[in-house]
Length: 161
Image (cartoon, rainbow, N blue to C red; front, top):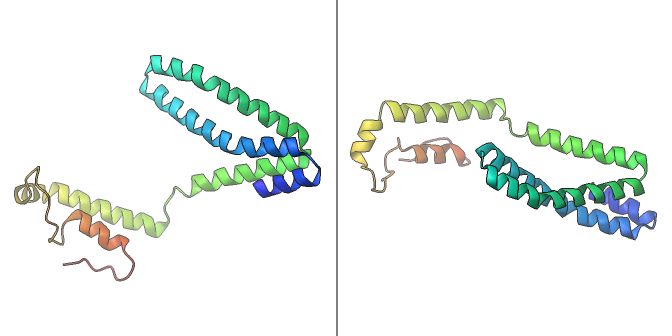
């Protein structure tokens, strides 16, 4: 996406817009991070911090909008539509990548089932063998971390002894 914009700006002799475009990229990521932090504070209901943080981030978001409008006015409408389509596609795939595949879901269900089994059926025995405050000796094949390690490593799916 950045390559398309740089090529367009260079071919049309727009060094100011090119500078603003390069500046806008990290600025946008910074604004997204600030917005995420603001939402965290809002969800936690820290109203005093929300007010202070809101006053802090307003200039950042105003600069973001002003520069984005300046860059958008300098570009052709078709290029602006292509960029919006690319950004939308990136967002869509980011959302879709969060979902595991069918095989991955089965594997996650197996790990979750084994973990629940250990917590329900073997919890007392594991707590007796490995008291709180002491490090666990994972020589047993039922140690949850070893089991997860065996499934995450490449090669045969045999549990280590």
